[in-house]
Image (cartoon, rainbow, N blue to C red; front, side):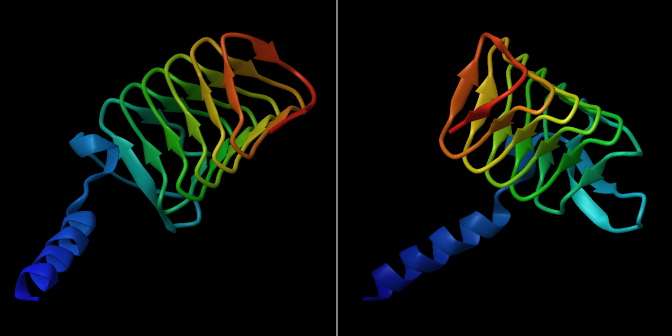
Length: 141
């Protein structure tokens, strides 16, 4: 019984110690409202005009620009770029060299990666996986 309790304690404690962006150096973003935002790796770039939710991770060489909004537990990583008025939220991930711009939205557990481009009024959500093409309209889930 003691072993089981010790194991449960260690597992829960290790979750608390998990570091954003797999241990990359960085700091937490401060939104224009003064509110603490998510973690930004020192190698990533986030414009001061962006809104980041408190649990967001911007890792590697990713860029978030203009009036983009990243909230929930979303992760933007590698060489991905999100800009204009694009929104990424929920558990969504944008990575590799993917680009999301204009009014595109990525949410739920969706992944956008490879050479994917999302622009215009496109929405990608649920468990959708978008890669290696440009999408400018429609709903993908």
